[in-house]
Length: 256
Image 1 (cartoon, rainbow, N blue to C red):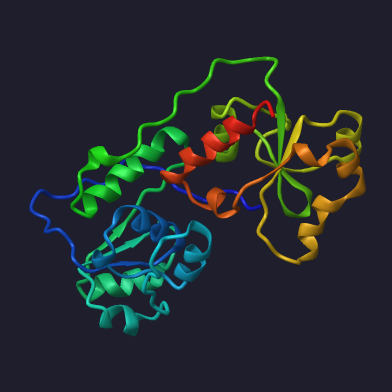
Image 2: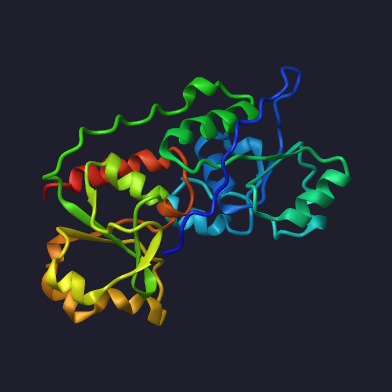
């Protein structure tokens, strides 16, 4: 599981005179997802080359059009708005801007409290009512008895404090099993001596050897199958309104 490499910053205001876009193109996966949530199908000219992956995991009812990531194909779509995250398709978006195409770089959140602002920004860019953004779920009261959750990724990398994932699990009422900051290599001996109450396996579905770590006999022995939680990996890759669904899912699992 890789960390969320996101950037923070104030939402960019959309000028009052900006026309409602009719042909929106996405250049990255996170923009694909937010468009699929909030844009009518007829408003989306194409999702990024990752769009097919989105169809498989988030489950929109229709198949979304997608482009191949080339300048030529994006220009041929005649977009009146292109959405992209801060670190993606930098050269492509610069070339589009040089050709006079309207490109908006979204300020993806680095905290749960910033998710609604990101959602409102995108709604405004689409000409929709920003009030449609989902309200944040309230934080639970601190509880020293709350169960400890180990968020485990590929190669035995666990999620510690000071991360977006840590905010998600704490908002859901769990305590983080990892006391350190950032993304840490798991100490198997420490886990066997003091196992967590549950393990959340949040790595991509893949036969890669890096994902075989979750089958380690020691882990399976100290944390029985009912206490292994599974979520779609894509939910951890980008923050957005779907993050609240993840928080709610983890809340439901808290005491099972």
